[in-house]
Image (cartoon, rainbow, N blue to C red):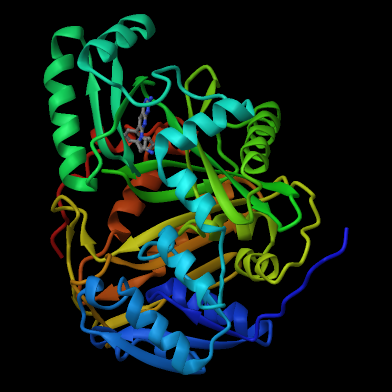
Length: 456
Ligand code: MV4
C-alpha cells in the first residue's frame, strides 16, 4: 500500500471551550499552526489566547457564530488554514459543512460527508449494519408506512416496543409503548414531535430493551480501508441523555464480550469504509446480548477515558488520518482503569439546573493519575449561551477500586467557588454501593437520590 500524504500546516478549530484547547495542544505538539474562532461572549477564553491566531465570528448566540458556516469559512479564507477541526457538537456531524470544507479545498478533519449522512439517518445506519452483519435490535425494516404496519410488527416482536425518529439520535424523538392500546396515540405523538423537531417525521419501531447498559467502542479507520478498535467505554451513568460519568474498561465487559463487540465495531466501520476516529454505540442487555444503536462520526467528550487507559492521543490520530497516514491496524485492550467525571455548572440539588456566572476561585485537582481538561480559571464567567460543562476530571489507576479512590480524593480537592457544580453529585455517586460494585444500567440515575444540600 502506498500512502498518499497531504501535510496539514494550519488548523482552524471550529469550536470553543475545553475541546478547542484540547485540539490546540495536540496541534502545537505536532508543529501545526492553529486558528481559533470565537463569539463575542468568548473574547476572554483560553482557546483564543492559546491559538496562534484568532478570528471573531459573531455574537454570543451559537446560531450566529459557532454554527454559522459562512462566518467560519470566511475565517478559513482570511487565515489560509488548510484544515478544519470541528470538535464535538456544533458542526461536527453536519455533512453540508464537511462538503463545503471540501469544496473550499480545506481538509475537514473527520469522515466524508457521505459517511456522516449515512450514520446521521438512523434507519439508513441500521440498515447498513444489518447488511454488514452487525447485531441490531429486532424491529421494523426501514420506515413504518402506517399505524397498522407498526401494530403488526409490534405484535410480532412483542411489547414493550420503542418508536424512534429516523432523524433523531442521542435520545431525541423516542417513545416507549407498553401495550397495543397505547400504540396509536404514541405513533401520532412521535410523528408530530419528529416532524416539528427535525423536519422529518419518519418513524421506526424496535423491541424495547429494558435496563440496558450503554457501552460504546472507539474505532479508528484510515483512508486505505483499515479499521481497528480501541476498546470500550461504559457510559451508562446518564441523566436525560446527558452523560455524567464514563469509564473504561466497563465493569460489565469480560474478555469474550470485548472481543465480540470489538469485532462488531470493526465490521461496522469497515462496512462504510470509515475514515477518522468514531464511536459505535451499543445497547447491552443483562444477558450480555449487544445491539448496534448509533454511530458517532466525531471525537466525543469522553475520548479522554480511552486516551488514558490505552495511552494514546486520539486527536493526533485524527490529524494523522486526515493527512493520509495509515493506522497500525492493531486493536487495543486496556490494562489500566480510567474514569471521567463531568464537572458541570449545574445545581445537582435543584434538578441539575444550569448555574452560569462568575467563578470566584478555582483550584483544580492535581497529582499522580489525575488529568483535568478545562477552559475555565478563577475570574472566568460561565456563559448561559453554551453547554454547562466546565471541566472534565479524569483519573486512572491500576484497578477500578483504586481509580474510584483516586477520583474521590481528586473531587475532594477540586474547588470551584461562585457557581454551583456537579462535584457533590459525583461525590455521592462514588459512595453508592451499587455503583461501586459496577451494578448499574442507563436507568440508574432515575432512582438516585441526591438528598438535601448540607448547610455550612
Ligand atoms: C433504546 C433503548 C431501549 N431499547 N432502544 C437512547 C439514546 C439513543 N441513542 C437510543 N436510546 C435508547 N434506545 C431500544 N430498542 C433505550 C435507550 C435509552 C438509553 C440508551 C443509552 C443511554 C441512555 C438511555 C436512556 C434512556 C433510553
